[in-house]
Structure formats: structure tokens, C-alpha cells
Image 1 (spheres, rainbow, N blue to C red):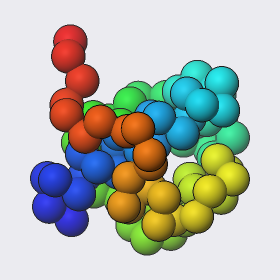
Image 2: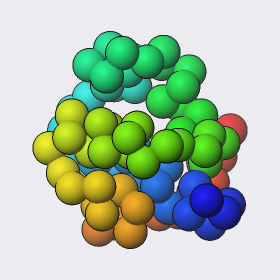
Image 3: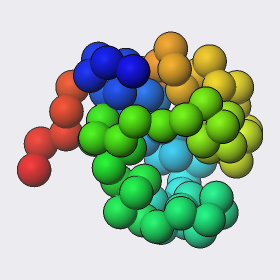
Image 4: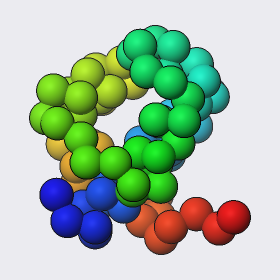
Length: 81
């Protein structure tokens, strides 16, 4: 994946997670990862396998395309620290 795709996926993950009212920690617990991993994905810093994308999408109740193509209203700009 290139940087733009990482950012798109991260922004979509963040938007959908927040729409579901989940914290990074809650999502991480649901999929068996650490909270810092979810944060790194949302910032576009991790290169995910298709299996991980599918698993995250499934736990959020969306299709993998929603993560890879971007959720409606998701801004792919990097978060401000």
C-alpha cells in the first residue's frame, strides 16, 4: 500500500470507529490488538495485511471496501498532534 492508501484506510477506520462510539482501546480489545496498533493504523503508519483489513471491517460491521475506499465523511489528512 502506498501512503495515500494508508491515510485513506486510517481515516476511514477512525471515522467508522467513532461513529460506532468505540475507543481505540475497545476496538483493539475486540480484535486482539494493542491500542497503539489501532492508533498507528489510523495515522497511516502501518501496512496491513488483507486479513487484518477484513478482520477490522468485520468487527466494525462494514465491508473491507469501506476501509480501503474511505468512509463517507472521513478526511484522509493526517491527524494534528
